[in-house]
Image (cartoon, rainbow, N blue to C red; front, side, top):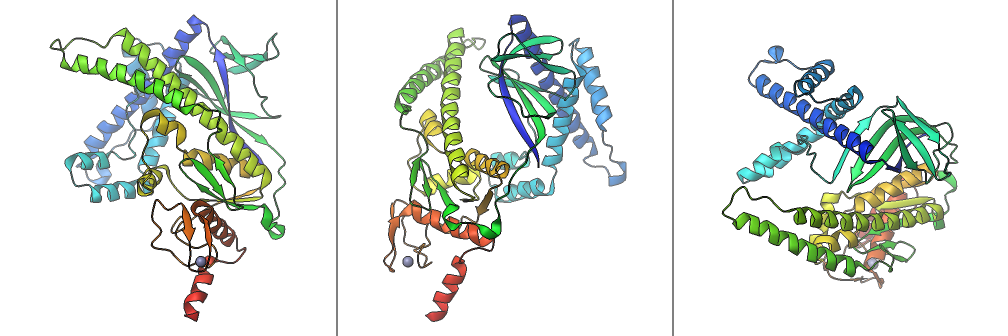
Length: 439
Ligand SMILES: [Zn+2]
């Protein structure tokens, strides 16, 4: 089987190399923004024209115009970088104009009431201008003109790009016979990374659906602080070792410091007064804490998902999107924690199920997303729906005598739906219909 996967390595550019990398990030963003401006102009001039008179720029036109604009501004650039920016830009436009996005924009527009909401709805899915001043920037490179060489330290390799020999920490090996599709060089809070999107062949033994062992099938209910399994286990999203409070207190203190600085600036009569260097320093510290906390979370997810895929042959989760989850958190009446506490403690459902999905695929296991409707309110024994189940109820109780942890109940329903979608097991729907027929 052909597998496409990303491998990310930390690189250690010296000062001079850093400047070159930063410049290419800037060029990438500029090229992207020039493309966006060209496209916006094109939309504007085509607006009132009949279909046959509308004119569209081709990819080569974009490339030419971007190069001209950069040359006029006397900015040195690498064509690979500007071309990659154009490719990515056109890809995001294609996505923005896809049937699904057009429909989604229409839906958002229909439900918008205020002018602000309407303006937001019109821009839904349309790419934004890139800002080079953010703590995170990057540029893309194609699959040519680079080398990965041995260095005299076994833990490091030399990654050669744009004739720069970059020291690269080689913490995991690239698989045999890989082919590079694309390279991304990124910076995040003054750290530098090289990511390789590669394709390689791997023999995968696919689990046989006909001989699936029911003990090796699991339903998973993702919640704000824990993960419920249909075999009755509750897993904490984060291991106990993380002192979230310590992080959170520091985060809050720094946030307060900086909001005071912003307030002073806003209240100042001198309009040209700029935010101080101390503001930037604090901002940097904030970014670092945020980055560390999200790394802790990611590590924890990797451990849990690897364990689940190793242990089970079929995993079922609810089909939830991130935005639905915020809604769900509100519905569940969970007190929304603010700032870092929220980011570190709350499960990132999308990230978690993405990890499960690719690990299942790479290990020949089954992964399925099921309809999330009524998974919490349906009794996992008799199938009856308990409409009275309150959002704060932690225990599910049914007339049939079933008393069970609310989330474990949901995870059993998720598993049943998952099995059903493969044509396995008893369907809950059938059980319910039968029950109705009897009464
Ligand atoms: Zn019941």
